[in-house]
Image (tube, rainbow, N blue to C red; front, side, top):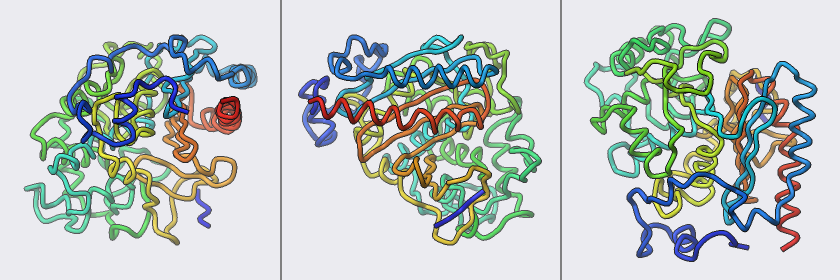
Amino acid sequence: MRYVIGFAGIAAPVLLCVLLGAAVPGCSETTGANNWAPCDYESNPASAKYDFNSVDSTVEEFLADYPAVNGVTLAIVQRSDGQVYENGYGELDPGRISMLASTSKVLSVGIILALVDEGLLDLDRPIAEYLDWGDHHPGVTMRQMLSMMSGLPPLIPGVGRCTPTACECDPAANMRECARTVFQNEAASIPPGTVWLYGRWQLAGAVAEIVSNKSWAQLVREKLVEPCGLPSTGYKSDTFTAYPEEFGGDPASLPETDNPGVAGGAYSNVCDYSKVLLMHLRGGLCEQVRVLSPAMVQAMQEDLVPEGVSMLTTRAGVVNYGMGWWKFEGDLEGLLIDSGAWGARAFLHPEEHWGAIFIMEADSDDGHELLERVVPVVRAAVIEADRRL
């Protein structure tokens, strides 16, 4: 133990793709127009069997207990039935676009692993072999980068996520130039695979840019936004120490940048993110579009922190980490969780075939409190719907 700081609702062709993969005739690997359909669970016949009144009550009680939180948005998905619920509470409409902070990581990892599927990257090949920046960190792999096991100069606890490399939070910087600075700094490095440390995600993004010869913005669009139909998703610079009130649900309020925050700069809404959760539950398919191979979806979920390795996190109950996904013991056991500093939580239960995303514009402690309250009632509602079949 590691203590550390039925198929209703899916058309038959889609169901075949979910079960058998893109090799089935008609399972497209290009953008499908249907993916751009807005989320409307009320038009989904399968949603009628679900009763989420207890979820609504739980969120409303949370907001009453935490009046500083101005609202929450929420979506729930089930592998066979699709999106089965969506709602907004308090001052937030369900379509609200918000900054995600670290809940960006599952999105970012998926974009990078799409390049592995294309043969442009090998998860276990040293990243130095893709770069011409000198002989540094010769044993560090992309798998280690994305699982926080790289040993690269880490976040300094209590100082800030962009210390000692300030350019990582600078919207005026260039991602590749900043990544070179990160890569060439060996002063605080430790051997890879020995300690879990918050990694340098701008370097991972720069490697993706280099092997694909595309910008991060292009990769986001081609590997995620277009195939899954995510009109409200993109990236800005990860420069904030508190939720940016000036964002106001409008991505245009923040400047464009050549240095988008790979670890925490994504913005989205629960409709868009619910499509990504369904993609993970359906083995890498967004509707009939192959986004990731089942092998890459599974690779993200594996325990990648070796037994006996400490994890420098203040969140009690964490027992392991995959690539973007946290794992907990206790009441959250069985879930994959992607948590953000502003309170967003994406969570999947792969064995029970459901997931959910809630977003708030508050802080991580508020998000964890709601997570612990809402998980059991979401789970109970999904299981009860299955029993009624």
